[in-house]
Image (cartoon, rainbow, N blue to C red; front, top):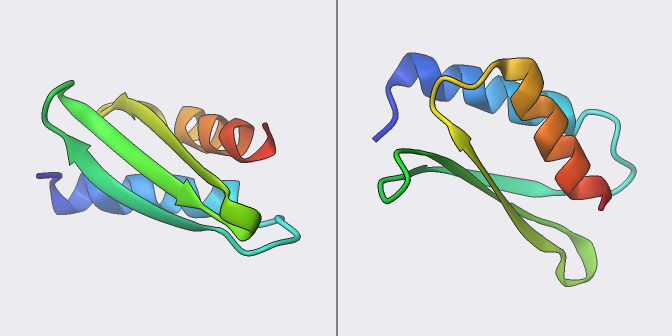
Length: 73
């Protein structure tokens, strides 16, 4: 699993990525035991579904940027 402190930091970074979106998106955060990191599944309108993975100790700004890039692709 993901410790509460790290999960809170990751959730805040993911929420920051979606603050200015015109349409609603949802994100699920889960530990990725096979790669030793975290995976975020993002879903949205018209069947949008993407996943982004990163290390547990990734900087919040990097997480926000990667999630935002994934949504905008």
